[in-house]
Image 1 (tube, rainbow, N blue to C red):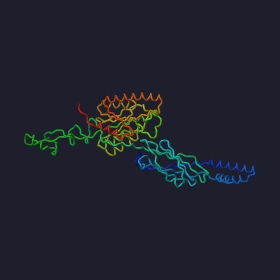
Image 2: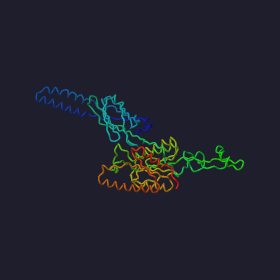
Image 3: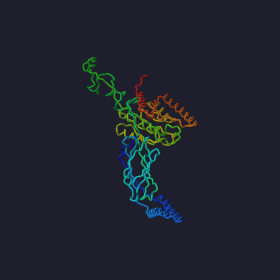
Image 4: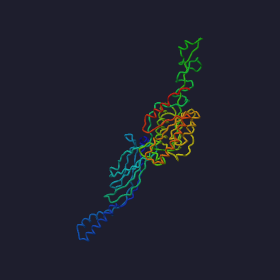
Length: 442
Protein backbone atom coordinates (compact mmCIF):
# COMPACT_ATOMS: atom_id res chain seq x y z
CA UNK A 1 0.00 0.00 0.00
CA UNK A 2 1.20 3.50 -0.74
CA UNK A 3 0.09 7.04 -0.35
CA UNK A 4 -1.83 8.51 -3.31
CA UNK A 5 0.06 10.48 -5.92
CA UNK A 6 -1.92 13.62 -5.07
CA UNK A 7 -0.55 13.56 -1.54
CA UNK A 8 2.95 13.05 -2.88
CA UNK A 9 2.80 16.36 -4.71
CA UNK A 10 1.45 18.21 -1.69
CA UNK A 11 4.34 18.84 0.77
CA UNK A 12 3.74 20.01 4.31
CA UNK A 13 3.77 23.77 4.84
CA UNK A 14 5.86 23.25 7.97
CA UNK A 15 5.26 23.78 11.66
CA UNK A 16 6.91 26.47 13.81
CA UNK A 17 7.83 25.26 17.32
CA UNK A 18 8.90 27.65 20.06
CA UNK A 19 11.46 25.80 22.21
CA UNK A 20 11.22 25.89 26.02
CA UNK A 21 14.85 25.94 27.16
CA UNK A 22 16.07 24.62 30.52
CA UNK A 23 19.43 24.01 32.14
CA UNK A 24 20.88 20.65 31.36
CA UNK A 25 20.35 18.36 34.37
CA UNK A 26 23.91 17.15 33.87
CA UNK A 27 25.10 20.73 34.49
CA UNK A 28 23.41 20.80 37.90
CA UNK A 29 24.92 17.44 38.76
CA UNK A 30 28.36 18.65 37.68
CA UNK A 31 28.04 21.77 39.86
CA UNK A 32 27.12 19.65 42.87
CA UNK A 33 30.05 17.30 42.19
CA UNK A 34 32.48 20.21 41.85
CA UNK A 35 31.37 21.78 45.11
CA UNK A 36 31.65 18.41 46.87
CA UNK A 37 35.18 17.79 45.56
CA UNK A 38 36.34 21.31 46.46
CA UNK A 39 34.94 21.02 49.98
CA UNK A 40 36.46 17.57 50.42
CA UNK A 41 39.85 18.92 49.30
CA UNK A 42 39.69 21.72 51.86
CA UNK A 43 38.70 19.37 54.70
CA UNK A 44 41.33 16.74 53.92
CA UNK A 45 43.97 19.18 52.80
CA UNK A 46 44.21 17.49 49.42
CA UNK A 47 45.00 20.10 46.79
CA UNK A 48 44.63 17.63 43.93
CA UNK A 49 40.91 17.32 44.70
CA UNK A 50 40.52 21.08 44.40
CA UNK A 51 42.41 20.99 41.09
CA UNK A 52 40.01 18.33 39.80
CA UNK A 53 36.98 20.35 40.96
CA UNK A 54 38.20 23.61 39.38
CA UNK A 55 37.40 22.82 35.66
CA UNK A 56 34.04 21.39 36.74
CA UNK A 57 33.14 24.58 38.61
CA UNK A 58 34.36 26.77 35.74
CA UNK A 59 32.27 24.82 33.23
CA UNK A 60 29.23 25.01 35.50
CA UNK A 61 29.71 28.75 35.99
CA UNK A 62 30.00 29.28 32.24
CA UNK A 63 26.84 27.27 31.66
CA UNK A 64 24.97 29.27 34.27
CA UNK A 65 25.79 32.48 32.37
CA UNK A 66 24.51 31.11 29.07
CA UNK A 67 21.39 32.99 28.03
CA UNK A 68 18.49 30.66 27.35
CA UNK A 69 16.05 31.19 24.51
CA UNK A 70 16.26 31.50 20.77
CA UNK A 71 14.40 31.47 17.51
CA UNK A 72 11.64 29.03 16.71
CA UNK A 73 12.25 25.65 15.11
CA UNK A 74 10.66 24.98 11.75
CA UNK A 75 9.86 21.36 10.87
CA UNK A 76 8.41 20.37 7.48
CA UNK A 77 7.59 16.86 6.30
CA UNK A 78 6.64 15.56 2.86
CA UNK A 79 4.92 12.23 2.25
CA UNK A 80 5.38 10.30 -1.00
CA UNK A 81 5.00 6.72 -2.29
CA UNK A 82 7.99 4.60 -1.37
CA UNK A 83 10.23 3.31 -4.14
CA UNK A 84 9.42 -0.31 -3.23
CA UNK A 85 5.69 0.35 -3.14
CA UNK A 86 5.49 -1.05 0.39
CA UNK A 87 4.64 1.81 2.65
CA UNK A 88 4.92 5.58 2.68
CA UNK A 89 8.21 7.44 2.31
CA UNK A 90 8.72 10.62 4.29
CA UNK A 91 11.28 13.40 4.11
CA UNK A 92 11.69 15.77 7.07
CA UNK A 93 13.62 19.06 7.16
CA UNK A 94 14.27 20.87 10.47
CA UNK A 95 15.82 24.36 10.56
CA UNK A 96 17.55 24.93 13.91
CA UNK A 97 18.31 28.22 15.70
CA UNK A 98 21.99 29.26 16.07
CA UNK A 99 21.93 28.39 19.77
CA UNK A 100 21.28 24.71 19.05
CA UNK A 101 24.10 22.25 18.57
CA UNK A 102 21.98 19.17 17.88
CA UNK A 103 18.37 18.10 17.61
CA UNK A 104 16.62 14.95 18.75
CA UNK A 105 13.67 14.02 16.52
CA UNK A 106 11.29 11.34 17.75
CA UNK A 107 9.18 9.83 14.97
CA UNK A 108 6.04 7.99 16.06
CA UNK A 109 4.70 5.94 13.18
CA UNK A 110 1.63 3.75 12.71
CA UNK A 111 1.55 0.71 14.94
CA UNK A 112 2.88 2.57 17.98
CA UNK A 113 6.54 2.28 16.98
CA UNK A 114 8.99 5.05 17.93
CA UNK A 115 12.29 6.02 16.34
CA UNK A 116 14.64 8.63 17.83
CA UNK A 117 17.27 10.35 15.67
CA UNK A 118 19.92 12.75 17.06
CA UNK A 119 21.70 14.80 14.38
CA UNK A 120 23.49 18.09 13.90
CA UNK A 121 22.11 21.21 12.18
CA UNK A 122 23.35 20.22 8.71
CA UNK A 123 22.00 16.68 8.79
CA UNK A 124 18.66 17.80 10.23
CA UNK A 125 17.78 19.52 6.96
CA UNK A 126 17.34 16.22 5.11
CA UNK A 127 16.01 13.21 7.03
CA UNK A 128 14.29 10.45 5.10
CA UNK A 129 12.70 7.14 5.91
CA UNK A 130 9.86 4.74 5.10
CA UNK A 131 6.81 3.94 7.21
CA UNK A 132 5.46 0.43 6.58
CA UNK A 133 1.68 0.38 6.06
CA UNK A 134 -0.49 -2.67 6.78
CA UNK A 135 -3.96 -1.13 6.57
CA UNK A 136 -5.83 0.94 4.02
CA UNK A 137 -8.09 3.90 4.66
CA UNK A 138 -7.60 7.19 6.56
CA UNK A 139 -4.89 6.95 9.20
CA UNK A 140 -2.17 8.88 10.96
CA UNK A 141 1.16 8.19 9.27
CA UNK A 142 3.76 10.17 11.20
CA UNK A 143 3.89 12.20 14.42
CA UNK A 144 7.02 14.19 15.29
CA UNK A 145 8.44 15.35 18.65
CA UNK A 146 11.42 17.74 18.76
CA UNK A 147 14.06 18.39 21.43
CA UNK A 148 17.15 20.64 21.10
CA UNK A 149 20.59 20.46 22.67
CA UNK A 150 22.32 23.81 23.26
CA UNK A 151 25.94 24.75 22.60
CA UNK A 152 28.29 22.67 24.70
CA UNK A 153 25.40 20.61 25.96
CA UNK A 154 24.73 23.20 28.69
CA UNK A 155 21.00 23.62 27.91
CA UNK A 156 18.22 21.47 26.51
CA UNK A 157 14.62 21.99 25.50
CA UNK A 158 11.57 20.16 26.72
CA UNK A 159 10.36 17.70 24.01
CA UNK A 160 7.72 19.59 22.03
CA UNK A 161 5.09 18.06 19.75
CA UNK A 162 5.72 18.75 16.09
CA UNK A 163 3.58 18.27 12.99
CA UNK A 164 1.20 15.35 12.62
CA UNK A 165 0.71 13.89 9.15
CA UNK A 166 -2.20 11.73 8.04
CA UNK A 167 -3.16 10.29 4.67
CA UNK A 168 -5.81 8.15 3.04
CA UNK A 169 -4.09 4.93 1.99
CA UNK A 170 -5.72 3.41 -1.11
CA UNK A 171 -6.45 -0.31 -0.91
CA UNK A 172 -4.78 -2.75 -3.32
CA UNK A 173 -6.88 -4.40 -5.98
CA UNK A 174 -6.86 -7.81 -7.63
CA UNK A 175 -7.34 -8.43 -11.34
CA UNK A 176 -10.69 -9.98 -12.23
CA UNK A 177 -11.44 -11.37 -15.70
CA UNK A 178 -14.78 -13.14 -15.19
CA UNK A 179 -17.57 -11.27 -13.44
CA UNK A 180 -21.20 -12.11 -12.60
CA UNK A 181 -23.81 -10.08 -14.47
CA UNK A 182 -27.26 -8.80 -13.47
CA UNK A 183 -30.27 -10.84 -14.52
CA UNK A 184 -30.90 -8.31 -17.28
CA UNK A 185 -28.91 -5.42 -18.68
CA UNK A 186 -30.71 -2.17 -19.49
CA UNK A 187 -28.01 0.18 -20.72
CA UNK A 188 -28.11 1.85 -24.11
CA UNK A 189 -24.83 0.35 -25.26
CA UNK A 190 -22.11 -1.82 -23.84
CA UNK A 191 -20.33 -5.15 -24.07
CA UNK A 192 -23.13 -7.49 -23.00
CA UNK A 193 -26.03 -8.96 -24.97
CA UNK A 194 -29.47 -7.68 -24.02
CA UNK A 195 -32.95 -9.07 -24.78
CA UNK A 196 -34.09 -6.24 -27.04
CA UNK A 197 -33.44 -6.06 -30.80
CA UNK A 198 -30.64 -3.86 -32.02
CA UNK A 199 -27.11 -3.79 -33.39
CA UNK A 200 -23.96 -5.43 -32.20
CA UNK A 201 -25.19 -8.52 -30.31
CA UNK A 202 -25.85 -12.16 -31.06
CA UNK A 203 -28.04 -13.44 -33.87
CA UNK A 204 -31.80 -13.15 -33.21
CA UNK A 205 -33.73 -14.14 -36.35
CA UNK A 206 -34.30 -13.46 -40.07
CA UNK A 207 -37.24 -11.28 -41.12
CA UNK A 208 -38.52 -9.32 -44.11
CA UNK A 209 -36.98 -5.96 -44.72
CA UNK A 210 -38.92 -3.20 -42.90
CA UNK A 211 -38.59 0.58 -42.75
CA UNK A 212 -35.68 1.43 -40.50
CA UNK A 213 -33.59 -1.63 -41.35
CA UNK A 214 -30.12 -0.96 -42.66
CA UNK A 215 -29.03 -2.18 -46.08
CA UNK A 216 -25.96 -3.89 -44.63
CA UNK A 217 -28.26 -6.24 -42.71
CA UNK A 218 -29.66 -7.80 -45.92
CA UNK A 219 -28.93 -11.51 -46.08
CA UNK A 220 -28.64 -12.07 -49.85
CA UNK A 221 -28.38 -15.88 -49.65
CA UNK A 222 -31.51 -16.14 -47.53
CA UNK A 223 -33.28 -13.68 -49.86
CA UNK A 224 -32.38 -15.80 -52.89
CA UNK A 225 -33.80 -18.93 -51.28
CA UNK A 226 -36.92 -17.58 -49.57
CA UNK A 227 -38.09 -14.57 -51.63
CA UNK A 228 -41.54 -15.42 -53.09
CA UNK A 229 -42.27 -12.09 -54.74
CA UNK A 230 -40.10 -9.61 -56.57
CA UNK A 231 -38.72 -7.03 -54.17
CA UNK A 232 -38.79 -9.24 -51.10
CA UNK A 233 -35.63 -8.80 -49.04
CA UNK A 234 -34.65 -10.66 -45.90
CA UNK A 235 -32.48 -9.11 -43.19
CA UNK A 236 -30.60 -10.64 -40.29
CA UNK A 237 -31.68 -9.22 -36.93
CA UNK A 238 -29.51 -9.27 -33.80
CA UNK A 239 -29.85 -8.44 -30.14
CA UNK A 240 -28.62 -5.07 -28.94
CA UNK A 241 -25.66 -4.76 -26.58
CA UNK A 242 -25.88 -3.01 -23.24
CA UNK A 243 -23.84 -2.28 -20.14
CA UNK A 244 -24.40 -3.81 -16.73
CA UNK A 245 -25.39 -1.79 -13.66
CA UNK A 246 -23.55 -2.73 -10.45
CA UNK A 247 -24.02 -1.26 -6.97
CA UNK A 248 -21.39 -1.96 -4.31
CA UNK A 249 -22.74 -1.82 -0.74
CA UNK A 250 -20.01 -1.79 1.94
CA UNK A 251 -20.96 -2.51 5.55
CA UNK A 252 -18.40 -0.38 7.37
CA UNK A 253 -20.07 -0.45 10.78
CA UNK A 254 -17.40 -2.73 12.25
CA UNK A 255 -13.74 -3.46 11.63
CA UNK A 256 -12.62 -6.84 12.93
CA UNK A 257 -9.30 -8.65 12.86
CA UNK A 258 -8.59 -12.35 13.02
CA UNK A 259 -8.01 -12.39 16.80
CA UNK A 260 -11.44 -12.95 18.37
CA UNK A 261 -10.26 -11.48 21.69
CA UNK A 262 -10.04 -8.08 19.98
CA UNK A 263 -13.59 -8.13 18.66
CA UNK A 264 -14.72 -6.15 21.67
CA UNK A 265 -13.10 -2.96 20.37
CA UNK A 266 -9.39 -3.36 21.13
CA UNK A 267 -6.79 -2.09 18.68
CA UNK A 268 -5.78 -4.47 15.93
CA UNK A 269 -2.28 -5.76 15.44
CA UNK A 270 -0.32 -3.75 12.93
CA UNK A 271 0.43 -6.70 10.64
CA UNK A 272 -3.02 -8.18 10.04
CA UNK A 273 -5.65 -7.25 7.49
CA UNK A 274 -8.99 -6.42 9.09
CA UNK A 275 -12.47 -6.98 7.73
CA UNK A 276 -12.70 -3.38 6.53
CA UNK A 277 -9.34 -3.71 4.76
CA UNK A 278 -10.72 -6.73 2.90
CA UNK A 279 -13.96 -4.88 2.14
CA UNK A 280 -12.08 -1.91 0.66
CA UNK A 281 -9.83 -4.25 -1.35
CA UNK A 282 -12.73 -6.27 -2.77
CA UNK A 283 -14.81 -3.17 -3.53
CA UNK A 284 -11.94 -1.48 -5.40
CA UNK A 285 -11.13 -4.72 -7.25
CA UNK A 286 -14.73 -5.18 -8.40
CA UNK A 287 -15.17 -1.52 -9.33
CA UNK A 288 -11.97 -1.57 -11.39
CA UNK A 289 -12.94 -4.79 -13.18
CA UNK A 290 -16.51 -3.75 -14.01
CA UNK A 291 -15.62 -0.25 -15.21
CA UNK A 292 -12.75 -1.66 -17.29
CA UNK A 293 -15.36 -3.89 -18.96
CA UNK A 294 -17.48 -0.84 -19.84
CA UNK A 295 -20.11 -1.25 -17.12
CA UNK A 296 -21.55 1.30 -14.70
CA UNK A 297 -20.77 1.07 -10.98
CA UNK A 298 -22.27 2.85 -7.98
CA UNK A 299 -21.36 2.82 -4.29
CA UNK A 300 -23.26 2.85 -0.97
CA UNK A 301 -21.88 2.83 2.59
CA UNK A 302 -24.06 1.44 5.39
CA UNK A 303 -21.98 3.17 8.09
CA UNK A 304 -22.56 6.60 6.58
CA UNK A 305 -18.91 7.67 6.86
CA UNK A 306 -18.44 7.93 3.08
CA UNK A 307 -20.65 9.66 0.54
CA UNK A 308 -22.77 7.69 -1.89
CA UNK A 309 -21.67 7.56 -5.53
CA UNK A 310 -24.29 7.21 -8.23
CA UNK A 311 -23.62 4.65 -10.97
CA UNK A 312 -21.33 5.78 -13.74
CA UNK A 313 -18.44 4.70 -15.91
CA UNK A 314 -15.15 5.93 -17.24
CA UNK A 315 -11.72 6.64 -15.83
CA UNK A 316 -12.68 9.74 -13.85
CA UNK A 317 -15.60 7.93 -12.26
CA UNK A 318 -13.30 5.04 -11.30
CA UNK A 319 -10.90 7.44 -9.57
CA UNK A 320 -13.84 8.93 -7.68
CA UNK A 321 -14.94 5.46 -6.61
CA UNK A 322 -11.45 4.53 -5.46
CA UNK A 323 -11.05 7.64 -3.32
CA UNK A 324 -14.53 7.23 -1.84
CA UNK A 325 -14.03 3.55 -1.00
CA UNK A 326 -10.63 4.32 0.56
CA UNK A 327 -12.27 6.91 2.85
CA UNK A 328 -14.67 4.40 4.46
CA UNK A 329 -14.07 4.19 8.23
CA UNK A 330 -15.90 2.35 11.01
CA UNK A 331 -18.82 4.52 12.07
CA UNK A 332 -20.61 4.40 15.40
CA UNK A 333 -21.53 1.18 17.15
CA UNK A 334 -21.26 -2.11 15.31
CA UNK A 335 -24.88 -2.84 16.26
CA UNK A 336 -26.20 0.57 15.21
CA UNK A 337 -29.18 0.63 12.90
CA UNK A 338 -28.31 1.25 9.24
CA UNK A 339 -30.78 2.70 6.77
CA UNK A 340 -31.40 0.55 3.74
CA UNK A 341 -29.96 2.40 0.72
CA UNK A 342 -31.84 2.71 -2.55
CA UNK A 343 -30.46 0.84 -5.56
CA UNK A 344 -31.52 1.30 -9.20
CA UNK A 345 -33.73 -1.26 -10.87
CA UNK A 346 -32.19 -4.19 -12.78
CA UNK A 347 -28.85 -3.86 -11.01
CA UNK A 348 -26.43 -6.37 -9.58
CA UNK A 349 -26.08 -5.65 -5.85
CA UNK A 350 -22.81 -6.67 -4.18
CA UNK A 351 -23.00 -6.58 -0.37
CA UNK A 352 -19.64 -6.63 1.43
CA UNK A 353 -19.99 -7.41 5.14
CA UNK A 354 -18.96 -9.67 8.01
CA UNK A 355 -22.65 -10.65 8.45
CA UNK A 356 -22.30 -10.82 12.22
CA UNK A 357 -25.75 -9.25 12.64
CA UNK A 358 -29.03 -9.38 10.78
CA UNK A 359 -29.02 -5.95 9.12
CA UNK A 360 -26.76 -6.50 6.09
CA UNK A 361 -28.20 -10.00 5.60
CA UNK A 362 -31.79 -8.70 5.76
CA UNK A 363 -31.01 -6.03 3.18
CA UNK A 364 -29.41 -8.59 0.85
CA UNK A 365 -32.45 -10.88 1.10
CA UNK A 366 -34.83 -7.96 0.52
CA UNK A 367 -33.00 -6.94 -2.65
CA UNK A 368 -33.03 -10.55 -3.86
CA UNK A 369 -36.78 -10.78 -3.20
CA UNK A 370 -37.42 -7.66 -5.30
CA UNK A 371 -35.74 -9.15 -8.39
CA UNK A 372 -32.13 -8.02 -8.08
CA UNK A 373 -29.29 -10.43 -8.42
CA UNK A 374 -27.40 -10.19 -5.11
CA UNK A 375 -23.85 -11.36 -4.41
CA UNK A 376 -22.76 -11.35 -0.76
CA UNK A 377 -19.02 -11.01 -0.16
CA UNK A 378 -17.95 -12.34 3.24
CA UNK A 379 -14.98 -10.24 4.39
CA UNK A 380 -14.56 -11.67 7.91
CA UNK A 381 -10.92 -12.74 8.35
CA UNK A 382 -10.25 -16.33 9.36
CA UNK A 383 -10.90 -16.31 13.13
CA UNK A 384 -8.03 -17.08 15.51
CA UNK A 385 -9.05 -18.40 18.95
CA UNK A 386 -5.58 -19.35 20.20
CA UNK A 387 -5.48 -16.45 22.70
CA UNK A 388 -9.08 -16.79 23.86
CA UNK A 389 -10.14 -18.21 27.21
CA UNK A 390 -13.01 -20.68 27.64
CA UNK A 391 -15.62 -17.95 28.04
CA UNK A 392 -14.48 -16.18 24.87
CA UNK A 393 -14.44 -19.49 23.00
CA UNK A 394 -18.00 -20.22 24.09
CA UNK A 395 -19.15 -16.75 23.00
CA UNK A 396 -17.37 -17.18 19.68
CA UNK A 397 -19.11 -20.52 19.05
CA UNK A 398 -22.51 -18.93 19.67
CA UNK A 399 -21.74 -16.03 17.32
CA UNK A 400 -20.47 -18.48 14.68
CA UNK A 401 -23.62 -20.62 14.88
CA UNK A 402 -25.85 -17.56 14.44
CA UNK A 403 -23.72 -16.37 11.54
CA UNK A 404 -23.81 -19.79 9.81
CA UNK A 405 -27.61 -19.86 10.11
CA UNK A 406 -27.76 -16.36 8.67
CA UNK A 407 -25.58 -17.28 5.69
CA UNK A 408 -27.64 -20.42 5.05
CA UNK A 409 -30.86 -18.40 5.09
CA UNK A 410 -29.37 -15.96 2.60
CA UNK A 411 -28.38 -18.79 0.28
CA UNK A 412 -31.89 -20.27 0.53
CA UNK A 413 -33.44 -16.99 -0.61
CA UNK A 414 -31.24 -16.71 -3.72
CA UNK A 415 -28.29 -14.65 -2.43
CA UNK A 416 -24.99 -15.93 -3.84
CA UNK A 417 -22.06 -16.00 -1.43
CA UNK A 418 -18.29 -15.76 -1.88
CA UNK A 419 -15.48 -15.37 0.66
CA UNK A 420 -12.71 -12.81 0.38
CA UNK A 421 -9.72 -13.79 2.48
CA UNK A 422 -6.36 -12.12 3.11
CA UNK A 423 -3.40 -13.59 1.27
CA UNK A 424 -5.60 -15.62 -1.08
CA UNK A 425 -5.12 -13.94 -4.42
CA UNK A 426 -6.69 -16.68 -6.59
CA UNK A 427 -9.73 -17.74 -4.60
CA UNK A 428 -11.93 -14.63 -5.11
CA UNK A 429 -11.27 -14.67 -8.85
CA UNK A 430 -12.14 -18.37 -9.05
CA UNK A 431 -15.37 -17.90 -7.10
CA UNK A 432 -16.40 -14.97 -9.29
CA UNK A 433 -15.66 -17.04 -12.39
CA UNK A 434 -18.04 -19.74 -11.14
CA UNK A 435 -20.75 -17.13 -10.58
CA UNK A 436 -20.21 -15.72 -14.09
CA UNK A 437 -21.17 -18.98 -15.80
CA UNK A 438 -24.47 -18.79 -17.66
CA UNK A 439 -27.35 -20.48 -15.90
CA UNK A 440 -29.29 -23.28 -17.49
CA UNK A 441 -32.93 -22.62 -18.07
CA UNK A 442 -35.18 -24.55 -16.04
